[in-house]
Length: 50
Image (cartoon, rainbow, N blue to C red):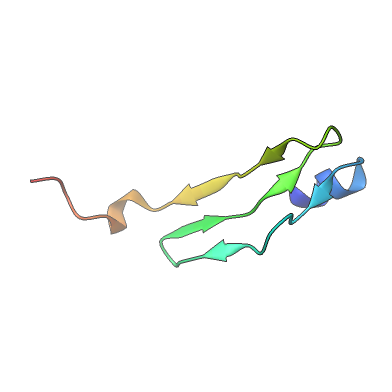
């Protein structure tokens, strides 16, 4: 996504990517300047609710 944003008038990696092992996110800006932050989180790494 970030590569595509940069190739089509947006900005890839508006801020440094975050990788916490169980959670990963990157920020990009679309051509209109809107900031998007796609992320992934491994829910199995989170403790179960009690």
